[in-house]
Length: 465
Image (cartoon, rainbow, N blue to C red; front, top):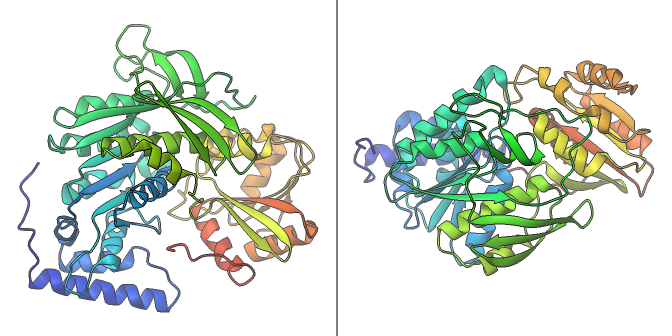
């Protein structure tokens, strides 16, 4: 690891902590949420505040990164650790840049910068990994997957992988790295891990069918020679069992493997996980193969910490969906299901899990183009809209409602366009009879906007809770 400054608290650290906590309190009083501003202010006063605070944690820090599933996997691992008796600090708001991590530490610290927790689990934005890891010096890093996402910010996937690789190369020999064996680009990150121990998780399930129009496959070429990879099994996007025809790479054998996946309904699934030859049954109260991947990753993280996987499986039976991820709210006798979408792979998994079967679907798409969403929305054309069950009522709202409606038009579906989100939500509720349900798919800033509007109409938690 590079040289680090003295981590003992000094006058500057105490001032930074106090000012940051004051900003945090003001944000809460004005209903602004925890978010990233308190951390940004505190870091301006003491640039190494994050490292000084995190160094107090006897159990160290676990960092979770990747394109999809960071928030859900973080929540799963936190639940597992808490069930094992640990006091866990985490960035519950999902603010995952360095300033968001700083805000999470500020929230839990006393006024003079002392922490009472044993361990921290942070989801971290891929582009922030080198800076955050240099300060936090994590004992465990988990990389879930790498999919095309926000091209205007991240660029191509190889660039994102290289950024994460730099963070892994800086870890010391006491660290552990958990990698998705089914993602060839994630698996290639092992080459950066000369000192940390590498552990693998993956899926080995038969009978997983892709959507008819799912053409999203973001990294299905050999990271070394560029040849198209051969696949024995393909689950979604480029995740599967692969090998390079030139013999350069092949899928590693995971120590934590999903052997069976059964969808119970649109709210739960049953998993059978194999860990070094032993079977583990998990009743997961979340739907979809993508959430099964999150659970297997969380179990791999738990195993890397030496935790009981039987207790971990029990903890997973009580996990609820985080902010915007399969979040259900009742509004005037109608059930709305909020589903976050942000890239083709995630969107297609939502379609496969919730929208591919005919069920008189009422569907609202809320799409904005804020900085947090990515300005480039060309990815909408790679979504398998054609696989949404025919006959659905579709309403498009948000800043880019017309773009979304045009995508539906090319799929043969005429969508209603109501650009104002308030009016769009009112129209959706009007078209949904009492006692029935509707699906609401939204990208990040649209989800924030919708939840703010729903807050006065339904029992809905603030996003940092």
